[in-house]
Image: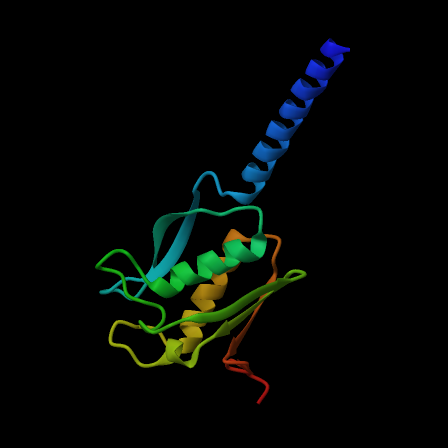
Length: 154
């Protein structure tokens, strides 16, 4: 009887430790993921790659939001230019099915001397960069404070 109780406690403690470690593994990002962002070069205005490492986890929407925010922050290198103004902000990032819904603030498109590209070209670079990292997602719908951005049907 005494041995059964000790065995039960031992198995219970091992089970608890396993569940705790599994929970931490799923919720806490472990390693950093290598991502390649594209920014315009200062002199030639070509898009050039810039490598960063981000703490991605199992939540795809979180990962897309992190990547978009990193693009909005701008380049780390001094010879690269920004895609959006310094006041750029992603108000919301949603992933539904295979589509990303991205809502940007109006301040993202305020004229900035460090922005070489037009807003349309900047959005194209952002879309290409995000879709290159998330192969299972096929489209990005961009709005500016709730209004469709650069709707070509009007």
